[in-house]
Length: 407
Image (cartoon, rainbow, N blue to C red; front, side, top):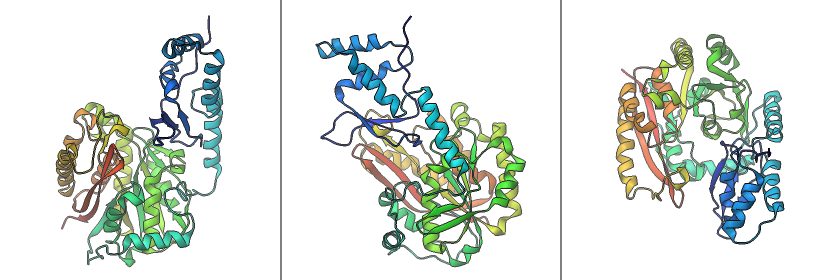
């Protein structure tokens, strides 16, 4: 009886190395249990398929020997597995200890610290304000819009989507600063059919946004089984963090927020049924919808969403180029979905998303559907639509939108 090799985690990101001088596969942990980024050289790339919890070290050694054409020492296999294990990329007790430690740190912390300062945007306030002033220069100023209820902005990298961010946030007026901003963000790594909440204030280089804990408590009391309280995903997620920065830049550093991470509606994608057919989702919709009705004059809604994800980075076997080839057809499909949203047609939007488990991979599906469900009767305008090559072979689309209550 042999001890099988430990399995590779199925929730890590594996992609071609972006560095020509270091070819191979790049491995990183989107959950940030491990901060290490590894490059697996081409000769060892096939070895990852042997890390399935069933193959033995000897089987891997034999495979590599036959593939390379010379004897591969057992130490090579040992070193590869040890490196992956030490960095938390294998499902072992060592990884579980790392996971629990990181989750405990976030749970016990009194604040939600910025996860992307210094990488996604400048970490010092002066440089950040200067950058955001450049983003907003030339953006169409706000118009008189007494019925403006919500905006939708991207959550793509700021330098890639700044034009759409600017168009959305230019719609905000100073009088909105007294409201509580309900931020519905995509939970890229969250649990399906769950909603992530936190009571922690959101700290940014511009200041602190206080979470409206009274509203958090209200939701938790009414839909406790639908909610992941102090959801660890808040500690790493950018879909809400980027919205906080623009809110602070436009309206000032001291604002109240209700940050809600919307996990994927997996059941809807698998069955084609409405998300609220899942009891947990329905209970949260009921609670949030009741809150939206009771506090309508106090709330303003912000959706942090992207649309289509196409290309090799996302598992396609072809390269995608923004606005060209297949992406021209994608734009038509995106526009069809956006038209349904603008009409407030929640069911029609769902009908376009669920076939083929959403072939366009709209990561903004859950926040958009949630908003249309809990704030019925809204209409929208698309302020800007864009496609952007996140790398040379992959494209993300996104849009800026404004939402109004139906007259």
